[in-house]
Image (tube, rainbow, N blue to C red; front, side, top):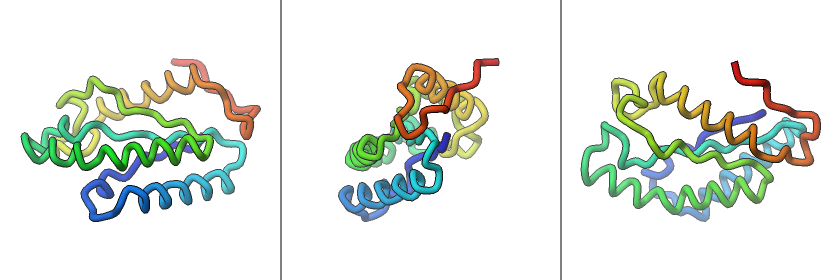
Length: 137
């Protein structure tokens, strides 16, 4: 399995979503060539409005701006045969590190569990017929 998140900093940069889609599509292509039997998982990011460090209007502004990038990332993942994993919708302050921006231990656990559930219920792409998900511990 190859799992990678969409870069949140791209949503803040002056990069058009079409260009972002192209960059993500190239990344998926390189990952597929490097790991042809892997299940590719494109992990989404939480809503910027949920980030404790991005209070009020800033989080809402960045969240609105990020929507086109999220759509582009989902489309690139689908086009590449990757699984797009949404970040758990019930994100809370406790899911963030002390800086209020990066994922903390609870956030990483919630994110991993959500991806695991998705993998357990998703079909294995034909490029990776022998891949399976290990049982929960």
